[in-house]
View (tube, rainbow, N blue to C red):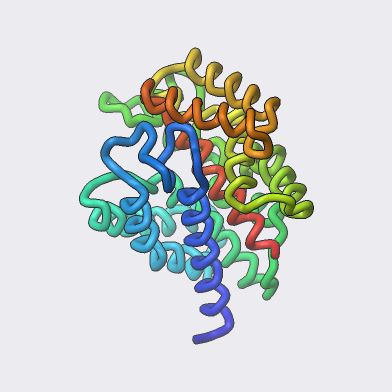
Length: 287
C-alpha cells in the first residue's frame, strides 16, 4: 500500500468513526441512539451499525478519487464522486434492507473525504486544518444548489420541493458554502469543550447537537413539519442549553423530555445529526 493509499484509508476510518460517534451519542431528541429509535420506526441502532460498516469502502474511494485528481474543473470531480456515491447508496440499502439511514451524510462525508485526499495529494499533509477542507469543499460543490434544486421538473425531489417552497437549500447549501454552520458554531464549541474535557465524549457530542439544533435550518424538520416546528425545536433546544444541557441535572431532564416529545410528534432533527458527524470528522482530520 502506498503512502497515499494509507492516508486515504485513514480518512475513511475517521469518517466511519465520526458516524459511529454520532449515532452512539445518547440521548438525542427524536433521533436513533443507544437508548431508542426516536421518531424513526423503520430503523434502530443496529441498522445504523450495518449501514456505517457498509460505507467504509465508498468513503475510501472518495478519498482516493480526490488524492488522484488531475482534472482542471472541480465540477468534474463532483461528477465522479456522484458515481461513487450511487454505488455507496446501493451498498447502504443492501445492508439496511432498503432503509435510508445515511444518504445525506454519505454526500457530506464523501465530499470531505475527497477534499482531504485532494489536499494530501497536492501537499502531502497528514493533518489538515478545517478551513482548508471547507475551502476545498466549496470549490468542488460550487453552483450545486442552482444546478440540482432550480430545475423545473414535474416530478420534484424532496430537496427541490423544499427549495421552491421555502428557498432552503438544505445540505447542498451547507456544503456549497463550506459548512458555515459547523465552522461558526459547532466546531469551535467542540474544540473548547474537548480542551476542558471535564465530562464524557458522549455528553460533549449531545451538547454539540443541541447547539446545532439551535442554529441549523434543518431540512428534515422542514420537510416533515414546516417552519413553525423548526422554530419550536430551536427554542426548546436553547432552553435545554440555558438549563445546562448535558452538564446539569435540569438540562439532562429537559433533553430526555425533548426526546419523548419529539418521538411522539415525529420530529427528527436529522440534518443537525448529520452536521454533528461532519463536525467530528473535521475535528479528527486536524488532529
